[in-house]
Length: 116
Image (cartoon, rainbow, N blue to C red; front, side, top):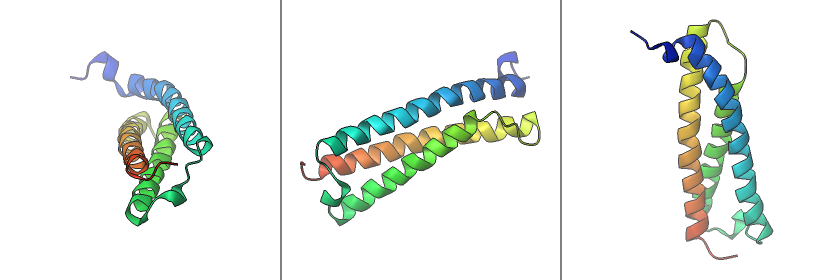
């Protein structure tokens, strides 16, 4: 039996609210990190082949994650509440995972690269 807090209706409402907050935080944190890097004089072109690939893959994962998190918070229910519950839960989880993995990969490339 599903607990009342985890019914599809309540879960979709929660994801749409928290998804909006997580979207704002994800965009803001990515912007702050990138602004700090760029204002220090660092550029992706400073990285060698393997580190450059790691940086761009990590950055692409972060961009994809922001899209997934943003879609999760969008107040569109698709076909039905159970379908929206399943899809929004999956995209929120995948978006969170990709944000962490992509951010860690991009920052690892920066840390292993030359100082600006």
